[in-house]
Length: 366
Image 1 (tube, rainbow, N blue to C red):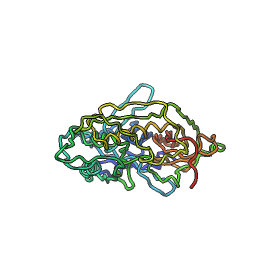
Image 2: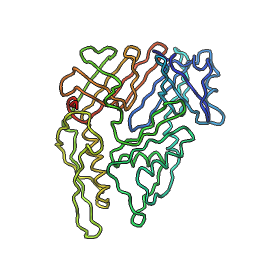
Image 3: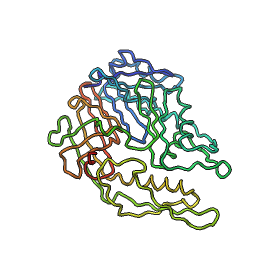
Image 4: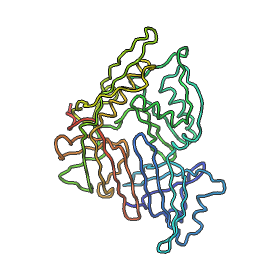
């Protein structure tokens, strides 16, 4: 597996296959994606004998050129990045060949360009998110919006939610307020992306993307697993009743309300924390905030690893599920891939990855 298995599409507004002289000059590709975060990429081109190559990308109009990167593995194509070029760097030195390095970000950057002021009278969270994301259908973004388990829909006569920031910041803030994540997943077809707004983990736990047998780490160059016993927090919140003016404690919902943990047993919290600025919230909004803090803090089991894609025949994606076996009983079981970093050269394709889950031990089989 190598960079020669990668197809490069570039253009504005529609990306098209790059000509052979451009593809042949590509000598290194780095891609980073993570759940709940913006994806980034870095393309390094060899300019030796190709002095006109920068002109292919840096136009007089300074358009944000669309970039689509497609991996062709074992007869199967998968889109690993759909974004725009941002920074063009021409690098020259006495003892090395000149190069052009282009860095860019996924299409959520287009959602983060203009600050907007608008109101959402009587609209639940999922309706607001769907409405905002629908505006980006022109660039192939398809919304996948999950209704939250706990959320309030304010009556237009009592409170009207307002947006006073970019679409991206607002969508992410709504997700953070209830323990959801917002991620733009490239594909499945070139020039299309799935805008996922919902709980994690979301992949099919019955079909792990990769099984890691610690006794035989074939293709896995390194693996480290870690549990932080003090990571989990028991959050508390108080709201002020608008009529009686009395202070009401809100019970924290069970984290399984959001999503079933990947681990078998979720240890108790050793920290107790009072949430700030909840007095003016409705009880449902406060419960959603408690659920968000409780669920995220329960993700105390983490891991890092690296693999050779050619040997494993697996290219991990952020949000995928992996199954670790034979490590030690507390560390065995399913994990979600929270972050992936691809590095492709003419001869290699490697990945480093981060793992995350709530709970200790392998989940009991039904």
